[in-house]
Amino acid sequence: MVKEIERKFLVSGNEWRDLVEGDIRIRQFYLAATPDRSVRVRVSNGASAKLTLKFGSKVRERDEFEYPIPLAEAEEMQAFAIGHVIEKTRHHVRHRGHLYEVDVFGGMLAGLVVAELETPEDVPDELLPDWLGREVTGEQRFYNASLALGGIPEIAA
Image (cartoon, rainbow, N blue to C red; front, side, top):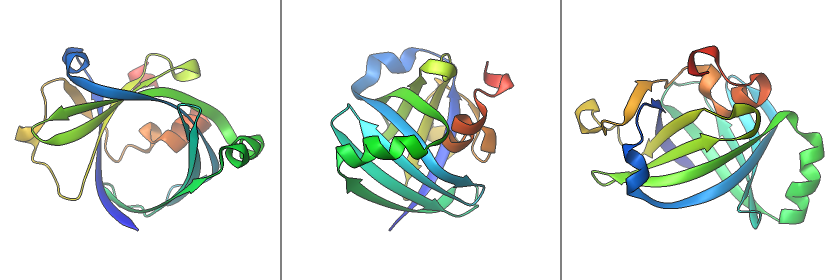
């Protein structure tokens, strides 16, 4: 089990694009989702899959369990998805020694760009990059499970 402090931000600029170290094409869907737990399947670059369980309702900290699963089984599980399948490209961007995951969404969520910072410790606001916009940590409508169930939030559209 991993404890993570997770912060989410809307992205307000494009300066991050020059700092991209790599990217991953992601297709993910949810098998279960409630405010305090979720079961997700993620397929990365069409080549590997993971099953992730998240528990907790704290704004910045949740328990996470993650397991590799056979790609063929992940493909079969998609038939049991609730809501929509999320398509996005995740860009890895480093700033002051921290890895930011900038998700550029496609499909029904096209136009949404969200940055996540997951760390074992809380990063002070003054150490955050300038290209981050409004923090949406704790705003459930920006959680991937909510996006899969409800679509793009109005404020981000």
